[in-house]
Length: 259
Image 1: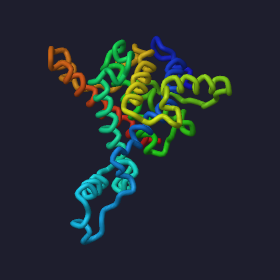
Image 2: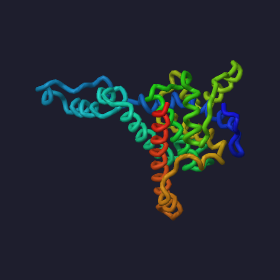
Image 3: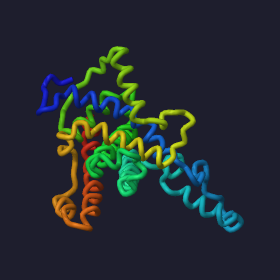
């Protein structure tokens, strides 16, 4: 790690927050990626002349299978940039949903600022997902992913060595398990409520370095202005987080292209 300690919060503290965060994102992203409520995976387009002979339900499902969803033929045909773009919308829509329905976050949703907690967790999830589409996965590429998050979210340029002893690694694992909760269990179904609660816990983890969150990508100045108005302020905050999510994705793509 870089020996330089930026600001009031040491680099070591930032890394201590990000390591378990990165490990905890795996089941959350799996839930977002692998959810297939309509059984679209494995469905293909029918051959010539078969279109009119199939039941309406099958025709609709086969049409949906052409949509870019992980596991479909359309997804397999996408390039890395296209898949990363898909994650922007997948993460953005989901985090907006759980922010709009605090009940999905359980008790945490009533104690944490919505835009800061969910926005930070959403950007962190997105960065890990994009790294994965570039072939950098948690565990094997954990240091690179932590460096990516530190750079984009906190403006910290770190160089990690990956030298954790067994005891330190066990602590990171234990903290990651606390963040994922029952999503880490093999028999736990990736229900929306479970994923939502996990995202709130991830938000709480990042909120532990609250003073650094202002450095993460934000929306435009007019989103902030709208966010201060009564009634429409909520919409302004959400659109601001959406804009910040897209900026985080661009920053990640730019950094990964340099490696």
